[in-house]
Length: 118
Image 1 (cartoon, rainbow, N blue to C red):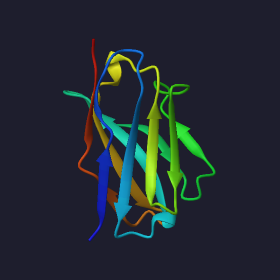
Image 2: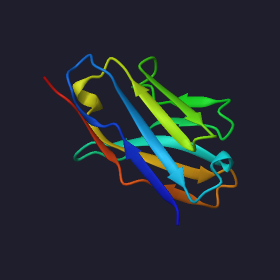
Image 3: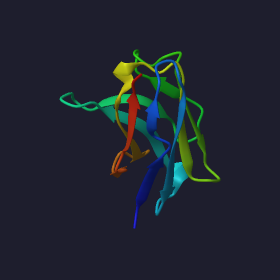
């Protein structure tokens, strides 16, 4: 059974930091591109950051470039999202996504809420 379990969300003040984690099980982790998506109330789901299966390449939405950093530990089957200089507009449910390098398989986590407010 495939599971992607996110953790690390919460309430933080503007300018603060959070580190999200997504622990994977039931998949050959090193064979998957890992991504963090986010969905704010009333808005479409958007890609925040992604990292290739080897960790060599990363990609970010323009809105988070320079503030967010995605990384992965293939030995621990975990992907991380370090979020700094958080803004109220970063408030959303953050979801972990795993997509096989072949593109044939895709899995989602349940999401973790991030709220940026004073």
